[in-house]
Amino acid sequence: MSTARRLDEYQRKRHFDRTTEPHGRGRRRGGSDDPIFVIQHHDASSDHYDFRLQVGDVLKSWAVPKGPSTNPKDKRLAVPTEDHPMDYASFEGTIPDGEYGAGTVLVWDTGTYRNTSRHQGEDLSLDDALDRGHATFRLDGEKLSGGYALTRIRTGKDESWLLVKQDDDGADARRRPVRTQPESVRSGRTLDEIARDGE
Ligand code: MN
Image (cartoon, rainbow, N blue to C red; front, side, top):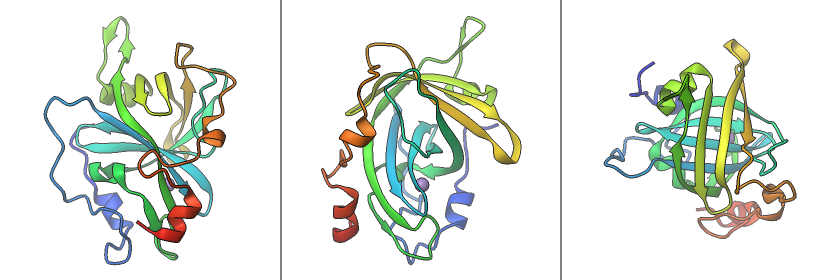
């Protein structure tokens, strides 16, 4: 699998004359910056959190129905979705009724991450780790920090993964950030406020 992924599926699913989501034709992010992650709360037909990690110049994406946990004992189902363009990381707004993903999107957390994936004593690129079905990384966000693991538990049409917090200084079994910190880290708004005010 190549790092240069295409956004064909992302673009095919959307009508850019009707949704304010980014098209993904923008300039690429490059240089030596740390890669970014973003978690978007998406109040669509079924409420979920979109977990996205920059790999190369796209955002690899998973839909996490219950959202991330800070408790290492929680295993959160993560269903892969299509790669998203880099500028999606700051998207917040409402996708109109009838369009793909109709509903409200809020930037729940964002920051940078550091890949810590290893295999048989060797460092592994995140891309290779994801291909192998087990990746580890440290998040440096506003709400979430420390190590997380993504592990593929099913392949094929029903491919699914688990997102699990690693037991480190960012772990906290009592925190419930999804419930207690619902607001956007970008605008401070709630889903209701974004739905009312738009972008
Ligand atoms: Mn979504």
